[in-house]
Length: 487
Image (cartoon, rainbow, N blue to C red; front, side):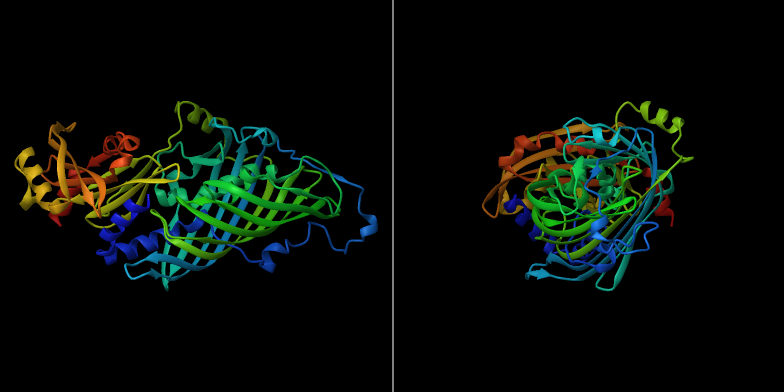
């Protein structure tokens, strides 16, 4: 919510270095939705394979069937390229900083269809989709001249793509992904449903039809679509290839804020294969800053090439058997502190907005609503509380005039037998009723973390036990601490 975002923003404005790190991180993950211009190289689409002559309109067929022909167990090799240029919009306490940014990404992957493409619907149930092997996955981003990059780890190349409502779900049976890895590949989930852009009927050259909202949302990396008016036209048929052009506007939401996208694109459909074999898309997005990502004013282009293959050595029955033995998808993400002191396995609704040597900041977004902020800090051992009562006194002193009352306080024990203090406080920040939840967590080595949660009181019931679920995935690594202290 805006009030909580403002409260948390004031805390961040005092941490200039943290803001810069957050900007750079989200520039790398800006793969999730950008903006429009007609780029001739992308939308020209090249010529259809074997096409060396101009088209005579008088030779155009009366109509062609544009319907997906993908079959279960078929294998494709897919290349996905992405490029964007523009500006980020970052609140800096004096207004908006607008650093220039340039992003490039390339994904190359094989996909085995586990469900006939024409039967893949946007239902609420998380059903089977495709099995993927990422041969290459890289992204580079430049923000005000400084370059950062992202890639998939070698042991996270095997992926499953599934769908739930509008949302493409990518996860690896090899283990949890990091947020950067997920953001790198997330938008490519839409490739599985390219056939949903087809009208599934006979179409004549010059005929128009509307594209469905939800496949567009996945293709553009949106979390939902409020309204879309995107119209497609069959331009011509050249040999085996039907060329389709589409354009329009999409209003939706991404990263918990509304956005507007103007787009124009083309795709080529192989009549003999019954498949979209190429798609080019250029789009412009305008999005204000949100609680978990900077705003953007960017122009982007995507090109997708699909080549049916006979097989892929990495996508054999044993990989599918491995997935079925898991029982349920591994949808958690993982992150580790820069010094290795802690490792966190967390739900995807949490977003890491800052990750530094001794501090990390996460924000929780639930169905488009900013619920809470979490801060993980390595504790100053010189101020170690000797009891739960002392920890309460330290919290009361730190909050000062914002303190209202203690709601509850308890002493727990970790799996290693070390003490954990938990204190919940009610108070006010900028005249807004706020709840703070504090933890003091001690590692067997004696090192400690302070974990705090901040949320508006009106959201307390909706937040429920999100703090406990997050801490269930937090592991302190005494071996890393010992190695660090010996250096």
